[in-house]
Image 1 (cartoon, rainbow, N blue to C red):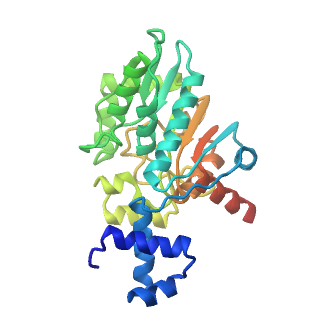
Image 2 (tube, rainbow, N blue to C red):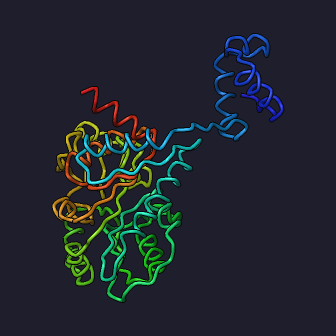
Image 3 (cartoon, helix red, strand yellow):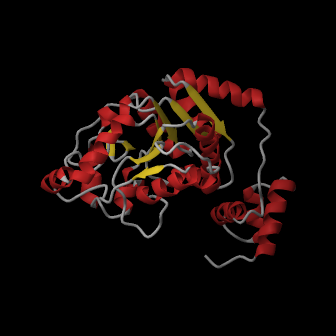
Length: 318
């Protein structure tokens, strides 16, 4: 598709949103297909030529939070505005989670942290604090060998610990190894063995939840899983991803070929953490959020309006 200049996009947006013209009418007067009109209108939103603001009232948001708390069996639900782009929505969720952490901090607290772009947004927005020396940040799983730190749990743990003036309990290991034998050898290493004992001391954990589409999962994108292995997970209905472990739509832990290769906190220990906070944004996370809550892996949810409304409709339809 030939590149369309900004002035043309502005004209198109003006005629559609302010002039009340249909996509069919725009197609005719501009001499382009209706499909192309639709693509160009999307481009207008992406380039922020058009920006939307929905004036939701506190009452509506409060009611939605109350509904999700009851429907998902949570202690708390925090809903933030959805933005024009997924990245901005994740930033909004991360900001609210950072506030939640700040209000929950106390001396001697152990904070567990998982990976993910939304977790990264939270860490970026955490306000520095000064806590007692025995306060700590605990890495909950091995990391990804990626140049970006968005999903590098070790780096996220280090940055968060620095901001909280806390001890950083991190370890150097990949999230997934090639064989059960290699995993067994890793876990016998004194450093990693001691680190795994710390999982029982976590007071509050911040967790991302993978998309219900395994092909969107970080393990596949980072090359830890092959196409065939990912297809196998789909066939097993393993839609959710929590610290690398897979769960069903009902929240049950599905034992897959991954369990003997993952270096991460196990599902049983994860459930025992007193306060587990799920961070996720977007409609594509709704099914995984529901699964995590049904499985007892979440006490608190921080999400955006689109995900919250999708969850509400899905659960009320059943």
